Image (cartoon, rainbow, N blue to C red; front, side, top):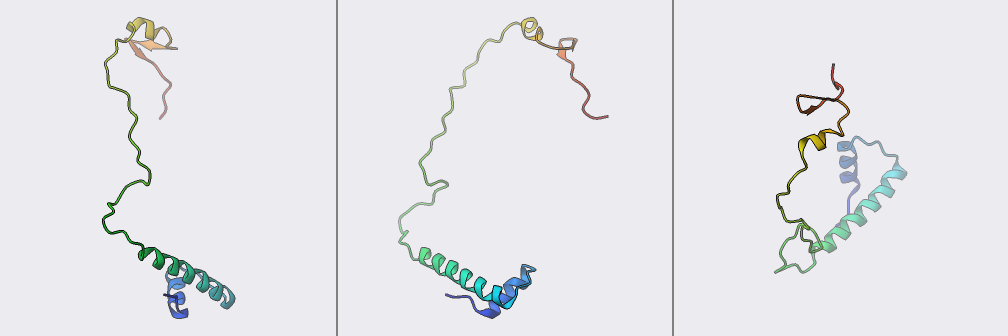
Length: 95
C-alpha cells in the first residue's frame, strides 16, 4: 500500500506542515516505504502467540520484606542539624 499525493497533502494539512513539491515527493516515498514495511509485519504468523508486555522474560528482583529493629531515636537524631520535640527542623521551602 503506497501513499497517494492527495493523502499526503491531507496528512500535511492535519499536521500543520507546509511542504514544497520536492519535499512532498521525498516524504511521500519515505512514508510509503514505512507503510509497506508495517504491512509486511502484519503478515507475520502470530497465531497461538500470547501478547507480552516486554520481549524478555523478566522477574522482579525484590528482597524479602522482613522487619528490622531501628537504632535508638536519640542515636538517629544525633545526626540532625536542628531538631525540636523529637523532629528534624528543615528550612521553609514556600513563603
